[in-house]
Every structure is written in C-alpha cells, then in structure tokens.
Length: 407
Length: 143
Image (cartoon, rainbow over all chains, first blue to last red; front, top):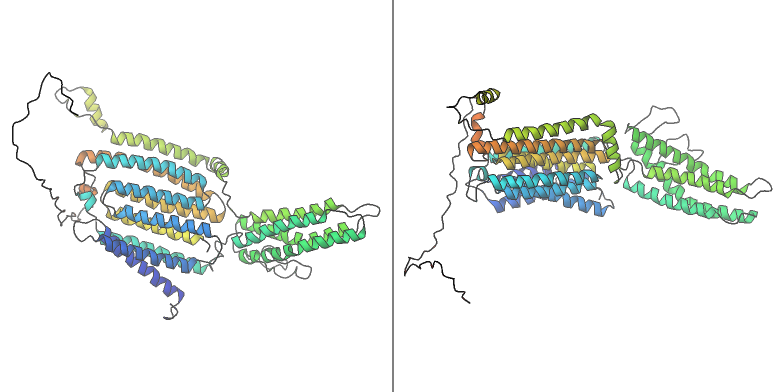
C-alpha cells in the first residue's frame, strides 16, 4: 500500500469498504430466493470478505507479541462465531440454522473464557443449550416438510437488508479505528500492566527470592558479611534493571525528575514531586492504585539495598547482624512487586467475586430480574393458552359472558 | 501478537451486524428470533471484553441480566409463535403484514416458488392372483 502513498486512514477506509462490499454481495447471493441464488459465489465472496476483514484487523490493531495460544484460540473462536453466524443467516432450513446458532453460542463461550468470564460461559451454555433444544422442538413441530415454503425460501428485501446491516458494520468498524487512533491506541484503555511488563515483574519476583536466599549464611566475621553482601548485590542488580524499566528509576539525583518507567509513562504521572498538575491518562481508582503501587516499588527499590547494607555490614557491637531483618526488607520489596504484578488483571477465578458483586451491589436488580422471569413465564402461559371454543351460545350461562368481557 | 480490546469489539460488531441482516431479511419467525439472539451475543461480548480490560466485574454482571432478559424473550416469543401458528398455519412473518403502517403497499411475492417435481417411480401393473389371507391357520415359517 506504500506504492499508492495512502494515509493509514485512507487505507483503512478502503479495506473496510472492500470487506463491506464483498460481504453485501456474498450475503445477497446466499439469502434464499426462488431465483437468482448463487451459493458457491456467495460463499467465495464471503470468504474473501472475511480475509480482507482479518487482514485489516491484523494490520490495524495487531502488535507483535508472545501470547500465541491465546491469540490462536481467539482467532479460532472468532472465526467460528462469524462463520456459523453467516450460516444461520443464510441457511434455508431453520433446523440447520438452530444448529448453527448452537455453534455460534459455543464460539461466543470460548471468547468469554478468553476474557476470564468462566461463570458466564457456563451459564450461557446451560441457558442457551436449553433454549436451543426448545427451539429445535418448535422447528420440528411447526415447520412444514421439505417442500419449498414462503418463510424459508424467500427473503424480505435481500439487497437492502444486507446493505443496511453491512453498512452499519463498516461504519462501526471505522469508528473503532478512529477511536483507536485518536487515543494513541493505549491511553484510553491502557491496560494497567501489559503482558510484557508482567513478564519482567515475574522475573523480578524470582530474582528477589534468590537475593533473599543469598543473604542467609555465615555472618560472624566481616569477610563473611562482605561475601554475603556481594552475593546479594549480584542477585539484586538484574532486579534493579528490570524494575526500573517498568516502574522507573528512583535514585537520589533522579527523584526530582519525571519518572521514565513504562508504567508511569503509559498511565500518566501520579503525585508529581515538582507540583505540576497531575496528568492521568486513566483517572479511575485502579489506575491510581497501580501508580501508587508503582511508586511504592520505586521507593523500596531505592531504599532496600541501603537498608540491607546498613543492617548487614554495621551490626550493633557484640551482636551478629540481624539477617532476618534484612531478609524482611527484601521480602517487603518482593511483596510490593507481587501486588504490582497482579494489578489490573481480572483473575480467572472470579466466580465468588461475581456472586459477591451481584448480591451486594445489585441486589435490587437481581430481584427485579427474578420478577421479570416469573412474569415472562406467566405471560408465555397466558399467550399460548388455548381459549375454549365459544360453542355454548345456545345455552347462555354467565361464565362465557364473563370470559368475553375479560378478553 | 496480542489480542487487544479492539479485536473483541470488532468481532462483536460483525456478529451484531450479521444478526441484524438476518433479522431484517429472513421471514421465518424462528430464524428471526435466533438472529435477534445472535445480536444479543454480540452485545454480550462487548460487555465482557470491557469488563476484562477494566479489570472489574460490572460488565459480567450486566451480561447476567442480559441472559435473564434473553430467557424471558425466548419464552414469550416462542409462546407468541405458537399462537400465531394456530391462526395462519405458517411461520411466515409476512402473513401478518396487514399489521403494517397505513398507506404502505403490501409486499407481494412476485417470483413463484420452484415447483416440487414429483418423482414418478415406475410401477408394475398388478398381475396374477391376489393372495388370499389365511385366517386361523398358523403361518408356516420359511427359512
């Protein structure tokens, strides 16, 4: 695309427009009609549309990164949902459509699982599996046999319908693209801790544990103490580098300057020492907490080596150095890093928290949903209830008159 | 490569749009209902993705209520389908187009449906003596 010297917006517009046109033509060909239906061509066009859409998605929002399994699963489930959704829309046979809908639900549940919504995945499968079975019974009960029928072999305004739907999709995709560009891709919905930083933090945790172990040992003589300190420094040096990349450096001379770590840069500064107005790119509570935690880690990273050195190298006269206190200092830093490591990550084990949120913050809504379900059940019974035939006209009793009045 | 929030939003958009196309164009009531459910699934993906990227559970809570509403919708709509089917013996939503807005012309299906070609299987003329049923005697087992 550099040959044509297009800006990224133009390129994106072309991609989305092309995918949309292909999708319109494909669905138009596939929608059931008595004449003019061309299934292979429609399928080919839809595959082309999906390819263009995938290319656009990859080029626009894709970033080089390591999470291979997660991304493979995402593409698998996304493709499953879209393919079976297309089958549901274009399939003549409503029973096959219901089957395709079941696969759409399964793919959606896979996406839920990738998004750490385990309870929702189970609930969706249970509820929709029941609903799909019931729908299936309805299809088998109410649909005529294989003979062509108005409801299955005709579509209402296939071209206009496909145009409306895909024009909407194209516009929303373009709006997504513009939003993602306008917010420099990361600042609006910056993840609190990215996968890259999380890896570094995990490595730092392991190295801090090693450094803590390096402190224990014989500390009776000054030489032994120096050895311990040297081993500790050896183990601590990579921690300093890794943490500095994430939370920023905080040495004595740099404490006044803005922090350079990736996390403060991405989320904005918090509590600037010079007194500038706070720049927060994410102003919510969790971002503030994460930045505070990062500041804590930064301070500890600055203090802990000094404290350890002071404790180990200068013991009170007549006593061995308090190694346990030094190790406690290191552990304090490690705990702070562990908390930062888990910041902003929705844990997969969140079912209990979901229940807690439901029953603490949304109790009234739960009750209302229950009432709604009850009313819907009664309403369904009332709607589908077969009213008695009014055959008793020759024997006027008060009961049918009352029933008529109610109706 | 990393899957970002935008990927999920884009997939949810396409799912919603597909459901919309199906709801607008299909005429089978049950298929229309399934397409509406698919639109709801697209919305649910949006909610869950935002919940994940904000690191809280409010979006998942909302999807739970969405599930409850979808269950109500399924019950009511299937009951409606039954009562509609009793009147017209058909699931075609165009059978109810006298409910349309005043002044709009009725939609007419111009193209005829493809005729079902009754396959004519070859038949043999009856020949020979019609076998008489044997009453009261045991049927001889033939091996």
